[in-house]
Length: 155
Image 1 (cartoon, rainbow, N blue to C red):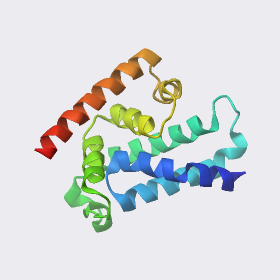
Image 2: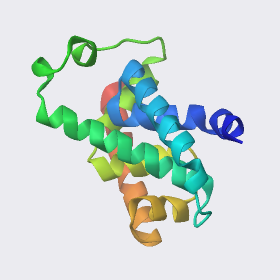
Image 3: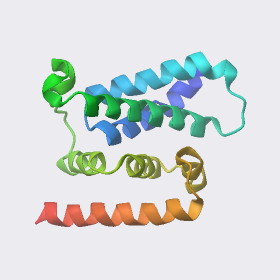
């Protein structure tokens, strides 16, 4: 069962983590940490929510803890492997999208990253603890901010 979960969710969780940290290696580490927690906690999963919602909540919490660690330790105080800018081969627009997402407030990062993974808005609301209408409005506003940044980027 765990192998199926891993295969079905690995890419989506990795992209969610990329939206938080905008660093390929760190995002892989955070995704891996997510699946370690999922593996350990899977016997305790009570089916009170969809398994995907549960996994995305775990990933979001792990990413938020990472952001808190980065806030406590300025970049120049982080270990070298965490402070170096990691470059990766993707199209410039995708890099720019991840940069835009990483500049959003933490809750907005979660919301838009989950939206980009085609998670239902009802599930997003459950993950972040907001009402469905509030999530819908925030998604619209986030998309508008990102569109504006892309217009400026393309000029």
